[in-house]
Image (tube, rainbow, N blue to C red; front, side, top):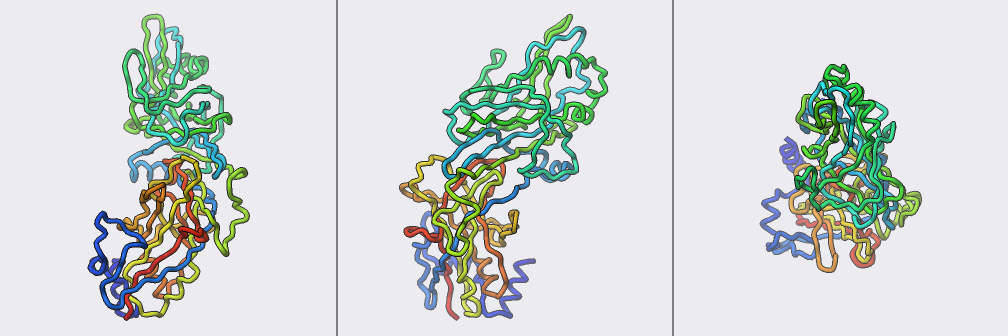
Length: 452
């Protein structure tokens, strides 16, 4: 429908966006599919290009979406999927970033029965690793708290959500993360996971002493999450090296209560399972502290741009793109072949932290992230914002902005763009970009066009 409307506009207006197959016809083969400003677009009379300066600076986003309301999350997404992040990272460029896990848990079997005179021997929280970010050679400490408030099914949760903490029920101090090492439990070798010991007395009082097979709060998992509202997993302040990724939906991720009674020794599991009758709500929340960062958010040069700008996952900072001379193409009558925005990563930082694998341009909104621009609602083609690795860390992102430029050329008013991670809340990546004022490889927009 949108494509048809654009065709109708082409009949009435002087500036026309050439269809993709026509653009390819006048483009020299890139061989490996590489696109960039050094690639020659030509071979036909009247085909030319225009480079426009770009003003870039850094801006903070208040918060990003981490979970839809319950019914939407379950029906649209299939549950609370994806990585959950926990840890703390201190970086000389972007300051302190913290990630915490907030999640409900459910009984693997309802009406849990601990038998006669049960005694809890130990309780372990097992979290299946799914990756990491940062330096895992540094010591880390994680704490586990009882969630003191219910998570509402009707709520939309954002990364700035601050959970109310109840009793501390466990933790693991000064450990070295091993996200790639197998573990052994009861003589069985299992995939990489973290084991956090939980408080025996807490589970004795709140589980074993009441779990007689007919305890009302254990009768269904809907009743259970009102009784045991969930947990919060967060890093202590002495952690500064890494943020760990966990898959809570993995069958290995659960709390295992080991106990014995008058007749037997057994276990009962409390799980994050997404396949039971009650789907537990679970997400990560984030905190950023830029007081010791390499930039001052309160004094960004929005008129001339900054030498270096930043893009960060976990509801952090974004790069604003302003192209002040873009309106000079209005009324030219040019045929717009393609418009490419190219951003180079900043070299020589020595940070060692991985940039975002893919970023994308969105419409700027005052305190949040706006919609994807039209070019990126259909994937963005070859200029889709995936990082392109060059020699000596000469990496860059390329964005196809052809439809965006087409709309400006036809007189439509557009806000600034912001460059954001494609994955907002399932990674901890951060990217340093060369700004529009960089003397070597500045951010710039190149427009390939054909004169009428």
